[in-house]
Image (cartoon, rainbow, N blue to C red; front, side, top):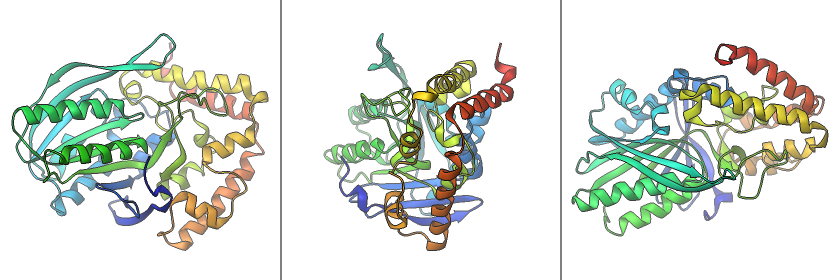
Length: 366
C-alpha cells in the first residue's frame, strides 16, 4: 500500500502546445510521477468509438510534448525503446522521439501475455518471444497499459535480469502509461529492488495519460455486477486530470462506461471484439437497469459519497495546489452533473449508448 496517499496533491508542471502536465507531490516517492492531459487523449478515454490507428495517433501530441520536456530537462540520455507486445504498440514512443530529435539507439521486443482460466480470471503470464538489444547507461523508454501490474513486474524483472547477466546498467526508465494506481506501488518496489544491485539507478519517471485510475478489486464486480476485477478502470481512489474531469462531466454517459480505456489491443487490432465488449456491457445495463441502485452507481463512478462538501471534494480529488477558481468551477460542474444524471433512467441511457455506438461503428459490424 502507498504511504500517505491522502496527502498527495498534483501540482502544475507545465502547460504548452495544448498539453497540461501535473506532478505528484506530497508523497514519499522514490520516483517521479506525472499526469498529462491533451484534447485527443481525452477523446480516446471518453469515447470508445475511437478505434484502429486513431488509438495510436490520439496519444502522439501528449507523448511528444512530454518527450520535449524530458529532453529539455536532461532526463533522457541514449534512448532504448522496450516494446512489450502488444499493448506497447499503442504508444507512439519512436515517432515522438523522432519529432523531438531524440536518438533511439535500439528497440527491444518482449511478448508477455495474460493467461485466463475457464472462469475468465487471470491465472498467469506467458513470455513467448524476446529480442533484447540493451544500451549501456541508457534511458529505457516503455509504453504499456497497467491494470494489475503483473505483466509490468514480470517483464521488468526479465529485462533487468538480462541486463545484469550482460553486465550492462541502466541510467533510468521512462514509462508512459494509461494505468492504475497499483503501478505506482509496483514501481516503488522495483526501484528499491534495482538499487539493491545498481545503487546509482536514478529510478522511474512514470507518465500517466489523463489520470491515475484504479481497478476493481478481486471479488468486486461493481454496483452494476458487470465489471471485471483487475481489468476495468474507474476514478475511485485515483487522481484525475482537471481537464479530463471537465470533459467527462460535460458528457452524459462517458462516466458510466464499463472501463475508462477498455482493452487497448482490441481497440486497435481486433475492433469487432472491442465493439462486442462495449455493446454487451450496455445491453447488460439495459437488462439490469431496474435492479441497479443508480445513486450508488453514481457514487462509485465519481469515487466518493454524495453529497460531498467542497473541502472534502478538494481533498478527495487531490487538487489542493490548483487554483481555487478552477476547483470551484469543477466542483459546481460535478454538482450539476449529479442532478442532471438523476433525471435520466439507466435504461434510457443504455439504449441511447447502444444506438450511438452502433451508428458510429456500423462499418465494422457484420
